[in-house]
Amino acid sequence: MKNKEINTLSLDQATMMLNAIPDHKHRCMFLIGTDAGLRVSEIISLKWGNFDFKKRLLIFRSLKKRKKSKDFQNRQIPLSDRLFFALSDYAFEVGKLDHDTYLFPSPKIKEKHICRFAVSKFIYRLAASLNIHDVSPHTLRHTCATNLVATGTDISTVADILGHQNSNTTRIYTHLPPEQLAKSINAAATRSGAKKKWLRNLVNYLFPKSPVIPYVPNQKHTPIVGRNAELQTISEHLEKGTNVIVFGHHGTGKRLLLDSVKTGKKILTFDDTASIKKSLIYMLLYLYQNDKEKVAAVLFGNFDLEKMETRLSRQSVGNLCDEIKKIVQPKEYVLKIKQFDDVTRQSLKVIESLKDTFVILAAANEISITKAPFFWNFEKLELRNLNKQKAIDLIHKLSYGMDIEDYEAYKTHILQQTDGNPKAITEMIERYRREPKLLTSTVRSVVFSGAVKEWDCSLVVVALIATLAVSRYMTGELDNPALRLIGGVAMILLIVTRTVVARTKRKYI
Image 1 (spheres, rainbow, N blue to C red):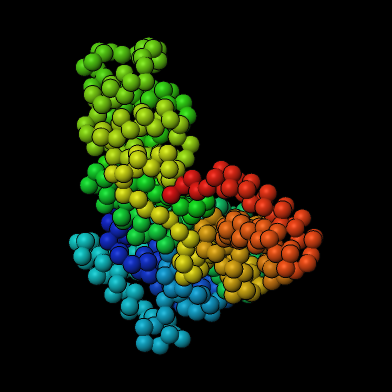
Image 2 (cartoon, rainbow, N blue to C red):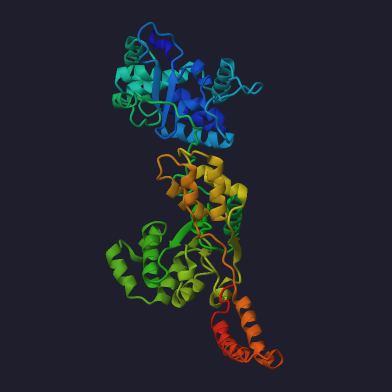
């Protein structure tokens, strides 16, 4: 084969094509070509059972006939990060997966896969829309091979990944012009473990019998499920400059929600409201060193941060607040306070003085009556536990790669124990994940009481004591002197109850 016959995509071209694909299905199709190097006939015949999401491997039986030994008919290809994430998104979109279901089923007959022409048509139209010429499904395979060779992967390993019977076939990629190899060095996603050692370690690999439940990742946090409406509401209010307080019971995901909010405004976070002066100093230093660096240069010339910190530490809290107000435009920043319950009286006064300068986004378990006036001009958003369907979605997302004997029983037990509390669901699944194989008996043995609803029985107790107190005045009619003693004790308890109720009356709204 001549070099000119090998058409490959450059980094820019591959990125352009990938970014232009709107849906998860076709992103998977494209990445399986560029990152796994499969032939078009192999792509269309893939099933969900070909993927081991725990080990991030694609195990595939080569369609090319072998004249020699059958030892290398099974190809084990590491999944790149972006292919793994794309497959996870696609799997969550599909729903319940079956081991023998085709990855790309025919739109007319679900039991069959799509045809070669469908893949070729998709690739051709995608390339044409971006004015990229001479692109076919095999171009993606050539791109994968060239990238592997360009990044120094051993020829025999490349041959195993591509399914070449003879490594001489693979050596055509080593004779490409240096310029073409250089362009390919960064074109593919990084593959972890694309070395010979993974072949030796996974020779005895067996397909999993249970359906695969892949992980749908959130790169920094626990997955956000069922809070899209709340996120949208918060973002809209922040853009308008409206302060927002998010409150709800423990474990409903308030802090996670605050961290996931996206807004066009810049964000500052108050992590330590107890040491309010220190927080104000660090806020000023951050502003001077980053966004307001030009302001600092105008005010202080070539300032030294250590000297600046010393100067600021000598100022009062009020002066620090005034200095912040001078360098920050009104409503330019969002001031995020993740735990408003811990705000002291002094901190509350400081935050109130900054309320017209910043858009405040805060979270609290409850709104204290003593702090209620502060929130008069806030948009209040209460977080409740997830409903059944959203809780099921969260369970599915968190249960990636787990070997579960009875998934329905597992799911039902978690729902019953947690009442849809996101934190409770997360903690239960973390406990289950420690089991190599999750048996139904193990599922039922784990009980979570933290999310059980609490009931206020104070009125019932008062009513019972009052009933016993009435018995004091019924001793004459019932001719039972013992009731006088019981009634007298109940009367004393009833008098004491008034004080107890006064001290334990509701303190939160």
